[in-house]
Amino acid sequence: MTTKLFGKDLKEYEDIDVDELLAKLTPEEIDELNSELDPDNSLLPPSQRCRNQTDKEPTGPFDRDRLIKFLRDQAAKEKDWEEAVPYEKKTRGKVFVPKEQSVKAFSDQDLADMGLDPETEDVLRNASEEEIVDLAAALGFSSIMNQVQYWDSVKNSGQSLEGGFTATAKSELIKAMADEPPNPTDLNDSIRRLESDAADLQDLNLNNLREISGQDWDRLWTALGKNTKLKKLQAANCGLTDAKAAGLLTALETNKTLETLCLDSNILTGPYIVKLFSAIGNQGRIRELRLSNQRQRVFGVQIEMEILRLVGENETLIRLGIDLQIVEAKVRVQDRVQRNMDKATRLARAS
Image (cartoon, rainbow, N blue to C red; front, top):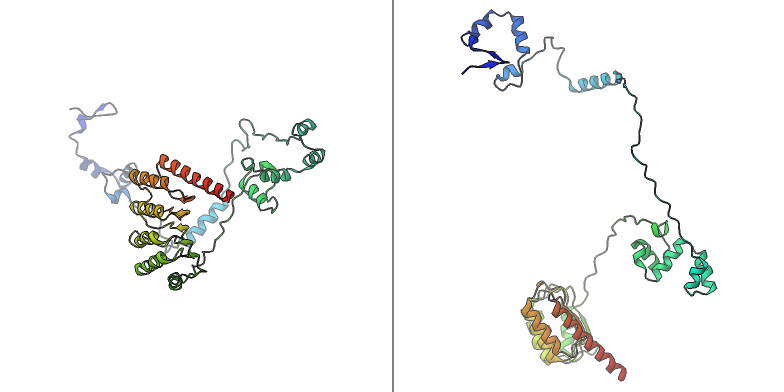
């Protein structure tokens, strides 16, 4: 195979001794040859790719800060390059000019068509746009204004934004909200009063008491089953499980006075909730039941249809809070509770 370089045949150079040619070169010619070699050639040894080309004698030890200062001073003394074409700011295309939005004033015919009396017409004609915004908020037209304007009107604190209906709401710093104070209810005292059937204990609030033991829950349910005065029991966010709440089902069999039961934000499962609806139906006195935000978000088709059946048989439940996923169960449960509410309203009016 013939080797060519730039179209020339290199066969005649194959037998040339390169070492002999290099020995005939002077030091100046060798330096010139080295300067023409590619320093990025990976075939060259590192000593030749990174050779020291400085012929000057060292001026002293290296001082980095002094070198940086020298470079900065030298750069400051250098004159800028002369521009062949001086810079001119040019605008390409059309310049955007926002349209002027004029506020349309009500004409006499418009006010007459609204059926307003002359005094009201004068008030609307002389009102500022900020006052019109307040009026729109009072009438419930929240869709034509931003939230800042709406709540300024609701709080009657005056409009904090300028610009009327075209005002832009600005971001606000997050306000730190203080934690709710701990529940001051004394559990042992409450259980004792339940056991003694105290007449002044009609509303028991145990919300957010997550340290109640299983034995205390059993004492509470036992006392509830014998109590005849308590009408409202709240136990939201108490870490209540099926095992801890098992005694409630038994208590509802004998308790005939409890009307409101709140068990929101606990760890109750679908099968237990079905048993609870069954116990409430047998008790026949619960009018309000809250079971929202349980840890088990989805109960399943079978559980929800069973809840639907039990709610359909209940004629006293007028308020119900529960998270259902099936549309049919959700709609029919809501419809049943609404019918119970209407029936209770008619009986209250008749009496």
